[in-house]
Length: 424
Ligand code: PXG
Image 1 (cartoon, rainbow, N blue to C red):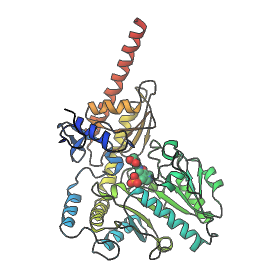
Image 2 (cartoon, rainbow, N blue to C red):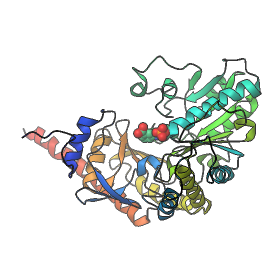
Image 3 (cartoon, rainbow, N blue to C red):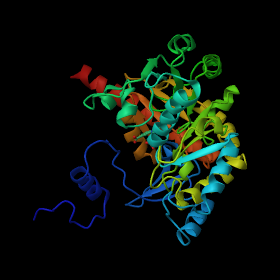
Image 4 (cartoon, rainbow, N blue to C red):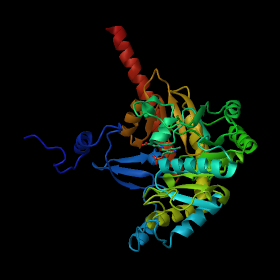
């Protein structure tokens, strides 16, 4: 008897793989691990196998799976009120926006849901600011962005992507963007003109492979924006909220942007929560009807977001990322020359380049799964490592040891297959 996909009772990873294959478009290529439970830095699959989560949902799980404070806040709010729309007020909105604004040292917060929405919102605000405040002629504003950027998947955001996979086949594209080489302050300076509303940058480029710009780049971007009267927008959706060892990655260069974009970890791994943070002189350009979202700033999101802000106010997560991050990077650098060709990153965040002669990033991730470690490849030979900030030193060692073993085994397999070829 043939099974009807979607009607069978799904119990095993194999069932889930089959069902997902048939019932969702193939816009992802997930590793074949079906997670059933998570706690802290650990997840358990449907068959009861345990894994260290070294992806942490691309940093959306900075506080780990089901952090007790975040779950308690969500549960409390679930029993009180979950949604009002922005047609009315509720008792979590003001507190969330005030507390998050204070954490960032800015005046105001525009709450949204996903990262892409925060970026779109930030770009709309920047254009409106250019016309209303800067005096840019109507519809003439431009925004300068970096090559290899990742800011999300909407038509406008992929319009200024340089990744053909993200972009091709989705035109026509939104005009008004200029792309310059990331990390090149002179190129940035040359691209900014009188009609530039904003410069939009990731302080460290995440999806590009955890690319850390040269020292002084963010400070130079700040200076250029100040001199030319353009807004400096920092997309801290992946870099922010503790990951790199500070609340915001811009802090590493003592830079205060005009606008922070946050998402991912702001939702505590529970709900999608994103935000645009800026001073009143910038966010004050929005008036009723000009922008919004049904779910943006909903009570559940705000209650969770307030708990995330409270956790960050302790400074403990930033400290963990800094201190454990130093150990993490030291250990990873020890593998350079033994299967890795480069290690980049900051805090508890690393992009490691696997020797392409040895294996692909995907192959390394597949083997790491067998050793109980979850990580994800990008751009053929890079593996991203970003454990929850609640990870321990011992767990870091366990994962790096597993990576070391995988690299040794791959080298051994190559030698064996190489000698077979020679022998044959
Ligand atoms: N900005 C940055 C720097 C990001 O890394 C976004 C914006 C968009 O966020 P949303 O919430 O709209 O995905 C990101 C997202 C994926 C995926 O599955 C996305 C990211 C990283 C890895 C995978 O599309 N980053």
